[in-house]
Length: 133
Image (cartoon, rainbow, N blue to C red; front, side):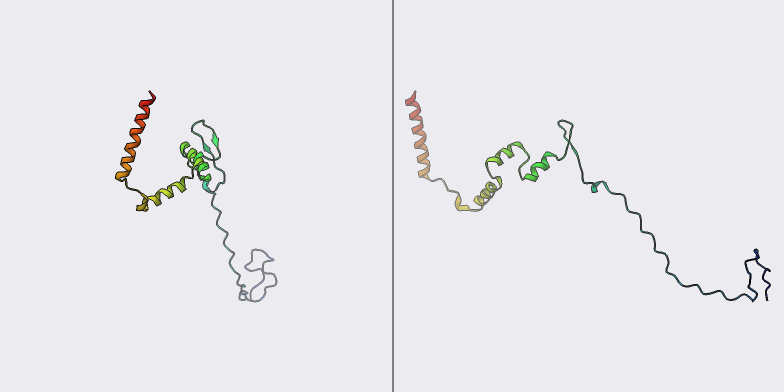
């Protein structure tokens, strides 16, 4: 038998333990602590919702470049194309031209009668010009 204060550095350490060392009590199995979540990555620049563009002509910032503005409206970005789009539906015109190229009977061949008629008109025009002088 062991004496209560034989090995202990503190007298209260083994107070009341007069028997031989007992087997250690079984430790209850516990689940390991969950791993902490990985840190969130820093936001990438492309995730920002606001963008700005610099106008090369005047050096100011603008919300949307003009090309994207006209593309969003479905209008060409060059001035002549925008003017033409105001008076004519360009897509419809191009579709008609594509269909005309595919249809071989749409083109009329010039005949001898047509050539004679054109020549006669030209001569009449010359006569009228001469008479007006």
